[in-house]
Length: 407
Image (cartoon, rainbow, N blue to C red):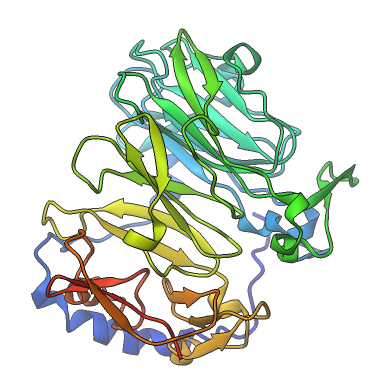
């Protein structure tokens, strides 16, 4: 097995016991089942997948967006009721593992035809694109073109990217299927990070990273727009991004959707790796309107992961946003994670893992405005183990939204 490299000193190790003790003190507030444990059964499963990374993440490390790694996707690809796993890889090809039951898996990548060797893949999403009852597969890549695979229902896939109208080539990242206009067909939203490589390849086949990739937001010409594709039926898609009014400006690595109004039409929360996030409200499946200031007046400066979910079974969706860049602006240990840091671009942040409150504008003060929006309460966020200042966005208490602006 390849050697796993790790820092000589882990600055967070000494804080683990204290964190565990603090979290255990909150268990009497939980209204959800939490008495479960996980056991590592990788060896018993038969899964031998190992992630391969570009040279820029190994011996020739460079601060470029390759270091964000790749994802996985899970679906019943053969119609037997068992969920298989699709592992996405930068180097060496992706792998599809069929679930044999009883915790056992088999590598069916070659027979399925979904390896994509030679491409740097980033993310993947399964969905029944044409209501055939079969889970089709969409994969994003870095500057090599994204791919839509049609599933025949038996775990064999066919590349139908060009026929489907999904042949965009960009530095793509997350992808999400959802039905934005309630026509019964899943539409597709593709995140594009922005140009962080040249068009030349190195000896390993990876596009050469730009030396100032992490400052790409300072170069408007490198921006790559996320794309919303409307499903037209019969495995055909149409780019309707401009038509429906979507115009987020940011280096988007991932998105999630939620119906915050309760009318059945999901809005879109766009992450921004290098700036503030944006939220677009869905108006009847016809257009989207930027409602960031109304719903989420503050967000992390440099977010990496996002998920709407009802974490405490209240019937209301809460939002978790993981923060990447706030604690990269200075050398901050976990014991200091609530300290303010100043970004090199003039913003301020309350650094906190896994979430934080950040401002990319001059700081002001704590403010509040009356609202009935469905945000998680401060006590709920404490229950989740984040602590008072480790808030992903804003909090709602006593019918008000409090926006934190570090002074």
